[in-house]
Length: 319
Image (cartoon, rainbow, N blue to C red; front, side, top):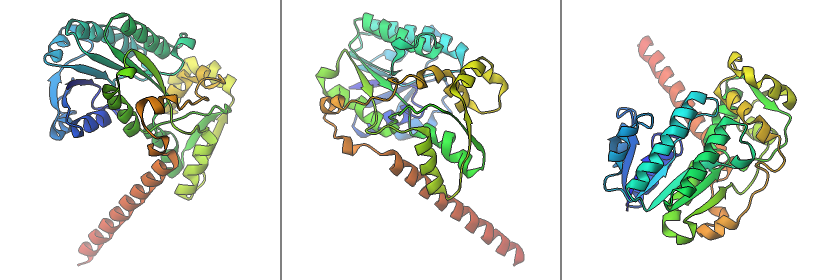
């Protein structure tokens, strides 16, 4: 089977590329910047130029392709990109896949998109889901919550750099997942016919609230976090002005999902039915505390190596 992967340089996409190559799939990655994607070629993937904002570049990418995995997405706060890439570009992608008679189209969406159409990001995701379902292309849709990888910048780094962590007073449990596990479910869908023309809510085996993640990072880092709590209603009020705040991109994204995070049923409920469908034991999944532990171990090792190099340089100066 030959795969066309869109978004291969991203956090999730690169895991899909790596695992697909390991499993023996022929992998072609649609990319705009060959230099940025050079590591994918080193892994063994074929690179082909394509730009979702230039419809004429898309059809040639499908030559000889069996299935497509769309792992690309814009940030929730990038409204222009959402329109040009995630809406108009994805419509062109679906049309090209239909013409090429693609055997399967895998699309990554977000949970509860149909409930929050007032949020541009969710409206676009919901719209593409509908267009894909109406296209007659065999599909599998995965609705995601969040990645472990995104939590490093949101929690671990601010603690290590003694910077404030902005949180709301919501107590919503979010079942994050490691991108390695998401990639595993994605590729497993090719082996299980029952996953065709189905939508799956892909959740981790445990839900976490912000306070629990902060406590975990504090324990591993050995230092306290500077937590800045902002009432939820305040965030909703100022969300239209988030561009004036120097809180970083993560806060912008969080503001975009403020309404979702305040909804009790948004990300709180996890179901394990899909584990049975995909024949994956929940115990096989990477746990969040193990992920953070490995991160801090690698970080401390790197700091020790840097310190050793500095000492050696000082010795050389003395000599």
